[in-house]
Length: 284
Image (tube, rainbow, N blue to C red; front, side, top):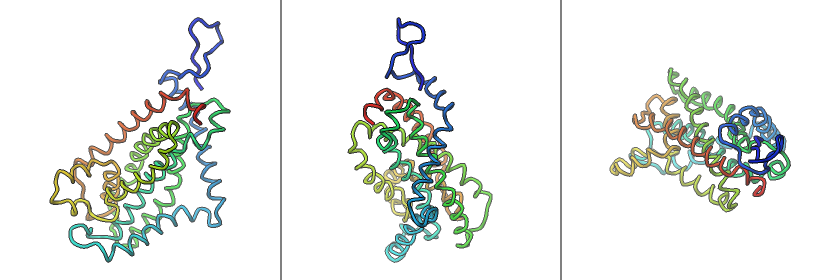
């Protein structure tokens, strides 16, 4: 970890537990980025080895959600709230939202679940939330492959917009990292945050229109529709659908707002997380 030399201290002596300047802090985190990658690889490997089905669980979980919601809402949804091509619409929504929910939930535990590591080793703690996002990104690889296969099986025509899906997820990863940084720090101050995360996730799941058309359901409420369209989870899910589904269109506002959400959230999350850097060993 970057150490700051204490004022008036002899050469070579540094003040312990002081927050390093932001730029050197980020520079050292970049220098040690291999640590985040190795830690993410270790976490995903160890979690999969604990299950008999191993890597199959990476795709079985979102598939099971598709089966449950598809079986239920195929018979429940009607009218403008029901999307024209329900099953592909549902699959893309669940698969994309899974990336956010994984980073959101695991990000809240990035510091608290690694207390011994935080207290025993000196390194930029920002690498722990980064490793969470890297881990979730690796989990998305077989999910993305399955998603393309399912789109082909369901008769979606292959278009050049399919190439946009990966860049959309990369921008979403930037947003997810910012969110993970924010909730990682919040959880070190109040563990109750981890109890709230599933509730917030569920609210965003419904508000983002994973299994129904928000545009159709809120067509008569333009102010509320605009507010929902500004939700980052709604925007990234909508962009994923626009890339993969031939008949799905999104408002120009969504294409502009999603990258802004990603950059702003990352900047705010980085500064917010860094400001408590010196205290993580105490709260871990």
